[in-house]
Every structure is written in C-alpha cells, then in structure tokens.
Amino acid sequence: MDYSEFNDEVDGLYRGEYAGLPIARLRPPDAPMPAADRTAWRISVNVYNPKETFEEHFARFLDTVDVGVVKAIIIGGWGEAYQEDSGVPVRLLVENAARFPALRSLFFGAMPQEECEISWIRQSDVTPLLEAFPLLERFEVRGGSELELRPIRHESLKILRFETGGLPAAVARGVGDSDFPALEYLELWLGTEDYGGDTTVEALEPILSGERLPTLKHLGLQDSEIQDEIASAVASAPVVARLESLSLSMGVLGDEGAEALLSGQPLTHLERLDLHHHFLTDPMIERVETAFAGSGVRLDLSDRQDPDEGDRYVAVAE
Image (tube, rainbow, N blue to C red):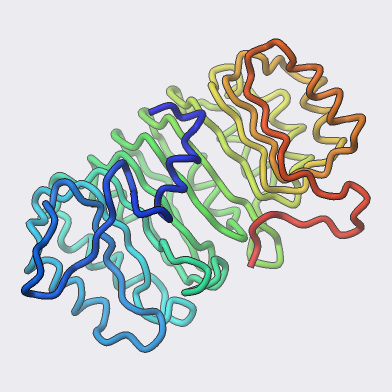
C-alpha cells in the first residue's frame, strides 16, 4: 500500500469497503452469504432501540459465518454507545479470539455521525484487543471518551489510527511507550480540550523520538488546537528523517507553525506533506509553495480557513 495516499483508502469505509474488501453484514437466514474470507464484516446493532443486544448479534455472527477465515472486522454500534461503553464488544472479541486466527484488520467504534457523534462514543481500555490478537496488522479506533491504551509490545501491527475529537494524553503516552517494531503508519486525531483532548507536545515526545518506531513511514498528528506547537516540535523531531509522508492537517495550523516547518529540518525527502484545513495567510501559503516547488513533494494546502478568524477551530471535535 502507498501510505502517502492512505487516507483515500480509509475513506473507503464509507463507500462500502474496508482493508480492500467489500463490507457486508449478517443477512436473513435464507439469504445467500458472501464468502467469509473475501468480506470485511460489520458487526453492529442499532444505536437507537436495537432489536437485539450486541451480545446476541455477536453470537449469531459466530454461528452463521465461517469466522475461522475472517480477515477484517468493523465493530459499529453496540447499542446506545453514548451511554454504554465498549466493554462488551471488547470482552466478546477477546474471549473468542482463538476462533479468529485469520483476523488482520479491526476497526473499533466505526459509527457515522448520524448514529453517534465521535466525542459521544464511550470507549474503554482497548489494550486487551491487541493482546488477544498478536497477528493483527491494522487497528483503528473511533471515539476518545474513556479511551485507554496501556503500553504494549506488538510484533505485527503495521497501521494504528485513533480518530477522536479529544485524545487523552494517557493514550498518546501509551502509544509512545509501546514497542511497535513493524508499525509503518500512525495517525492520531488529537482534538480539543473541551472533549477530553489533553495531549501535549511533551506527551508526544516518545513518538517524535521514533526510538520504538523503527519502521514508521507515515506520521499524522492531526486535528489539534495546539497544531503550531506540534509543528514546532516536528521541525526538529528525529522520527521525521525516516518518514515518507507527514500530516499536520485538520487543526489550527497558522503562520507560526508553518514558519517553524520552513525553518526546521528539511522536509523535501517526503512524498507527501498534508496541511489541509489550516489558517495560513496568503504570503505564508506562497512561501510554503515556493519552498516545495520542484521537490516532488505532494503538498496539500486545501481547505484554507480564514486566518483572521477570532476563534479558530479543528475539523473534528464533537
């Protein structure tokens, strides 16, 4: 996979694909079922007034699908996710991990806005999922409320993403203190303090050092209200030299942060630099474009916000 264009692939989740596979749900008993190993299975119940509990639905999934060959699972709504945390689906997956020897991709909490706002999704400690699936290569989580991640060593994980409107600092530290020798793609949506996003630059330092991320190719520190501070830290971060793509998008990046990037270590080795949703002035946009002209770096400065806006805002919060 070209990780510099990975966000295009991520968007496929909302076009009916995940991990390169078409998404399907359980069908009525008499309906034909797709091949279990050629499908990304969405396991979810209605957020509002579900007809069955998540536990009942999961049991039916185990009884209906050849789970031994399932490669990709999407956990959607587990009921009223704004009231019930994710403890039940975590427990069910962990208890039945041995029945999923082929599982390589897991998206946990994939609920669209109309089902549950991202910052209303109540998560829990997701570390047991990584412990139970040592061969997992791709792990993505949506929702930061009550989210926990303890430091762990995982030999197989290549892609790790947290989509939140507010990432707890403890989760960022959990990532930085973990050993991920195979990790190639790391993306964190940091969000705002209003929704629990208390991650600081200091909490990100172990990630920026890159000491435990020897194979990292893409780093995304996104959707932050301290995007200028993060850009300043990234400008001298050791991990950057080995990256192929970097994203500081979706946040409140302004001229101060862009100046730090231009004054810091060279970034022209990157294949892609994503700064979309920013608050740069016209002169700074021109300077950034000039700095990367002819370098081969695919520069994304789209979705420019008004730099004179008094209250700057991140792309995803509530």
